[in-house]
Image 1 (cartoon, one colour):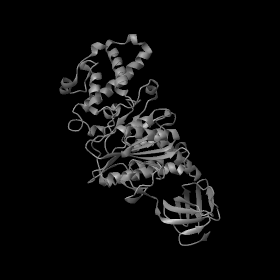
Image 2: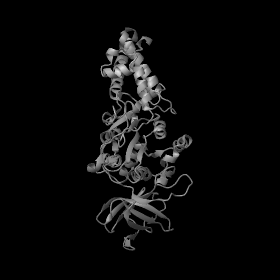
Image 3: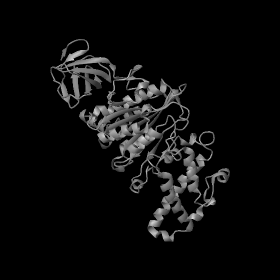
Image 4: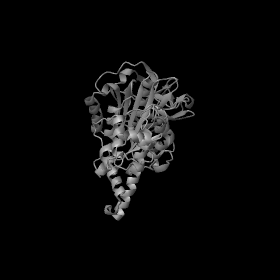
Length: 463
């Protein structure tokens, strides 16, 4: 290995795919930026993935194709990869590495920030508070999203998670506060990327959305960098510009696949289903960048979207995500097959921060008891349907038939909501009461008497 200057070396020892190993160098830092210049003078950027005494493993962002093993020059920059940030990011479309895709020049940046970031210090965290209205009743009423929360969507192949993602980005609101969306898509097809952009353009919300797109044909490293670029932009907008930022990341399964691919190339010992043993900590390094900081008005709220392989909720990706985040929205294939959109499963979905942020003075006094009663009734409907499949519906009691009717209306009227339909929280709560009124008053054991007097109007005679 020939040293050319203090931080520049000629040649490398080994190249495997987008990764190369270089030895007999000075001790370098983890996540340090590396510049690789080939014999024709073409420059590429790399990141140190692993470092040791006098050696480094480097991943090249543009791939190692065309790089000569013996004649290239390797320069260590002694700094981490940074991204320029400013409010001008809003309304723009970038690739996974922060380069403009919309044909416009790079925006003017206020400052350069390290893309790796850090999880928010627990002592500086403020407990998430105040809700974000998504305009989707099955979320706002039953699984309320809170500012500073991490609430993932567990989906499956072929389910409409992309539509739900754009609908939330288009409809989400925070009352009387500066609000914006950072949208990060990893490993998506070209037509899906066009759908995202077109949806934001046609709805007129693109001016408050910053989009980072990593297409399916992009290198694996681009999928790994995309959420880091997006979250760094979100941190600037939230904690420097005091905005409330909703970060939507889809699809985290593609991110994890890229991580597994990179781990395999590096020859690491695999853990569950071939994923690296550090998958949990890697996901946590992204998810824990959401939250609120004491003394700062802004916040970062995350909705990571992932597709569960074979709809398996125990798969390592949703399993580990569930440990880190505060609940999950689960999409159900059976509901989707019956034409119900969005197909949000009533029972496995939950928001763990919901109970502390709804009720009198926060949303509406009847919100906690109403959502609890709807959940309880829908669970009972599932039991009655299972029983009916065995003994037949004709053997059910009159009350059971009322529950069956409740289940049908809950799915067709409450869960079902058009892609362009935005319901306010008030409208969702009123609709929930209308559907509850199909059942006798004596069944509503989770509702306060004062709320029953104000909202309950029995209409079970319609069954």
